[in-house]
Amino acid sequence: MTHAMLIVWEWCKKQWKMLLGFFVGIFSILLVLRSNKSEVGEVLKKKSDSEKAISNAEKLAAQKREESLQKNLDIFFEKNEDIDLNLKNKLKQIEDEKKTKVNSILESEDPNEEIARKLKDFLDS
Image (cartoon, rainbow, N blue to C red; front, side, top):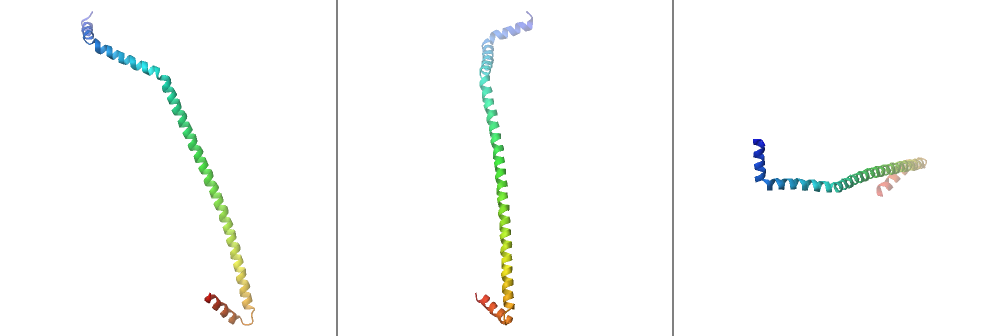
């Protein structure tokens, strides 16, 4: 043996407990990792499945929210159109009533007196 090999051999003889502990530790770690390989794979698969389920649920929730918003907008615009139509009809009805009253006042025997009387009634009410 060479001089370097003798030095290593002497060191190993003195430190055999430490070397044995080191190799037993490495062997144990490899054994544990090898035996848990399938369990780790299952856990990772479950994690992946859970992430996919969460992603799908988020997409579905976003789609339902969008549909709900669109439905609410459609209802709002529909009701707004109805309100506008009712308002226009009421305004036309009021305008027609106004014309009728003005015509009846103008067709009376004394329009000035009729106007004064209507103003007094309006102010009193």
